Length: 72
Image 1 (cartoon, rainbow, N blue to C red):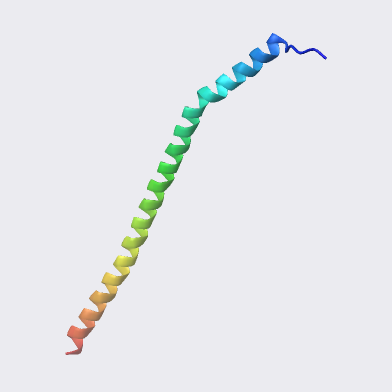
Image 2 (tube, rainbow, N blue to C red):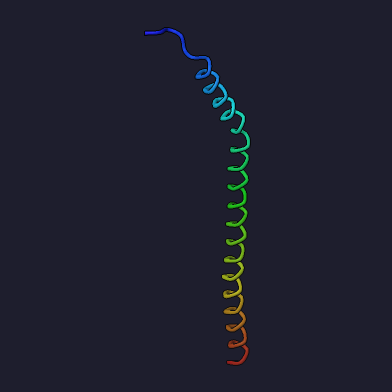
């Protein structure tokens, strides 16, 4: 069995490894941007939900206040 490896094989593997290592920072940044975008979207959705719940509470308080004024 031969103990040497065809230089074309080693060159192909080396080029593949260089490509993977070269693309890693871009892939990591893409993943980070997607995570940040999702977090911002969830924060906005939570803010809208909190505002809606606060509006229900304010409307209830106003209704109860008006009812108290009219009952006297």
